[in-house]
Length: 110
Image: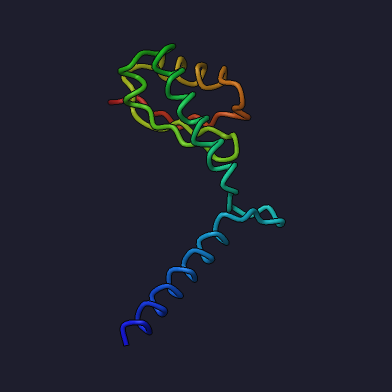
């Protein structure tokens, strides 16, 4: 009985692993799924953009701005104290190598 339970559990893990690999696969029709490499590239780009914002616009601005990257397109969101902070954050993001475009959704605190 214990052997059957182990086999069933192993089969369940194997099925979950195969299913998980399918989620990482790239789609030929250009849908919203990313390959593991694209996901890793986007994560690295996000880190570089956050660092650039901290360097160019200041740590306070960097902590107020959220950065999300999808296939090289960077989206900036959050609330900052001044228009200058927002402009500097966008400018810093655009300078990072690999950034295809920047969507600025940063808002001013009121």
